[in-house]
Length: 202
Image (cartoon, rainbow, N blue to C red):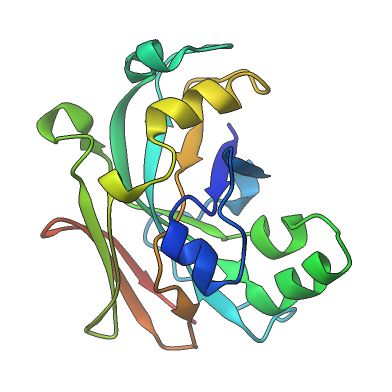
């Protein structure tokens, strides 16, 4: 199982980090070891002093595939949820300043929190609202129609390079509003008004 992630998929988020809005999906990977176990807390790593939350829609691949046209992409997922892409922003900034890969800041253990999955056929794929509550306060909110690249386009683009396997996850990028976490924070992620993810920071 692999975790395929998309960066800069919301124009306002790209702008808040002073990044260019991309012409194609910006892809990076997280290994299986990045996946948080359900119910466990996020343990703040010693190598960073600035961990950020990035709330994203996550889709689970249900079929093996390669070179998938966007018009057939919907056959490759039936479930989705909200996830948090935990990012060591201070480390990422150092790596980017040296034109080095992001993996140390993005793919570390526990860096991918994933909520309970919902059936996509119960929702309008182009109008999915999601949000993150931190310590009782709304800190991030997004809607799928604002993605620069839809899940269908992401699947088409990524499958040109990677073979999809059953159980692979696609993190589709975060809207604006990313921010720091601290020990003892409490994060709750929602699809509309349904809570799908609950994480405590230790």
